[in-house]
Length: 171
Image (tube, rainbow, N blue to C red; front, top):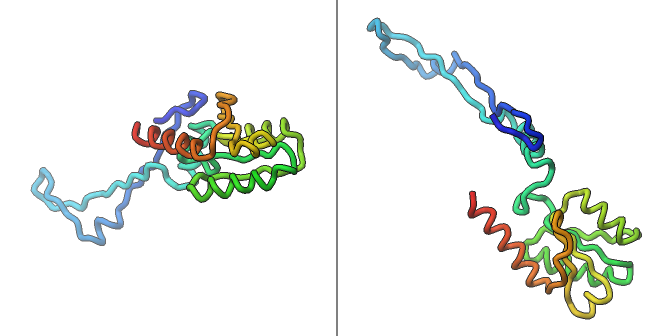
């Protein structure tokens, strides 16, 4: 039994009785009555299917995957179209460093972009504007914690790697 984020209990797995394989492999055992008997094989599928496993994982984490598992670890959000080129440079740098990153260069207000990406549960939002472009930094927001301040992209990579290493070493 596993409890999900809402406290509901789920049973993971199915049990199947198999009469076919013991016969195909000609399996036998000697019972308490000194007679030969054909065993019954029991198969246990812990999750039943990949789809069920993913559904239980989503339910258990309430859609907020751990950083090491989430499809997108960060999204770069330019304040306006003027900073799209810098945002693309940051995106390429992070992707080349194996940080799964997207860019949100829609023609929307910055508040809407931040809110939309928060709702997508992307762990880190990287806002870039004039100040960040001139200083070669990014403004970092972590989901659930808010603004972490400005930092160099190299420092952000180290932050992500440290967080992932810590999470994986706990398990």
